[in-house]
Amino acid sequence: MKRLTLLFTIILAFILYSCGEKANEMKEAFKSMEKIAEAGKNMEAETKLADVRKKERISRGDTLAMPYQELQKFLPASISGYKAEEAEGTSFNMPPMSYSQASCKYVAPGTDGGENYVTVTILDYNQAGDMYVGLTALWQMGFASETKDRKEMTFNTGYDNVSGYEVLDKNNKRATVNYGIAWRFFLTVEASNQTSTDFVKSVANTIDIKKLSGM
Image (cartoon, rainbow, N blue to C red; front, side, top):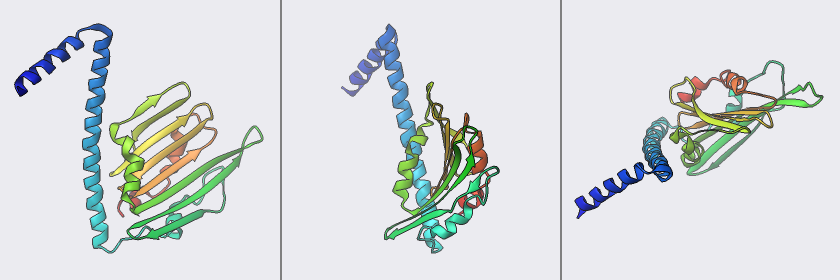
């Protein structure tokens, strides 16, 4: 019976594959299923790697998120052409969960009399792995999308154990890059008045991502 079912499925797939518009829909459905299956495998592998790194940190007594004051030291001291406002931060510890956040806004006069800005935010999800996985889950599918208004996609950061995701809001000229760092840190750089993500990536690369990825 199983062989008959499999044979019927193959024949049906072949017929649909060969019959016009419905065939295209079926082919796209199969592609989507393959991508979902691949993403599931990637997420499983990522979860295992994250667990290994977490156990390594626990073995050396690193069981809490970094205090936000320490996390702030990784923020850029300055960005050319912009003035840094006062950095902000938060630490949250309620075992078994622990995370912290540091952020800073940098501003510059705009040519239209307004204000341009860059914001940099770093989160430490040392003991909040589920939150980290939730933020990066879509990346495992190698997602890419573009319309006349918006472009977003994963990208190669050039760092080991660091994944990247970029978004360009064409209408509002807002660029954002997100870096998932070693299954622990999450870095976001956003800037106004941008027509590409090149500038926000350059800002991100002024941060010691390599050091963060080793923690």
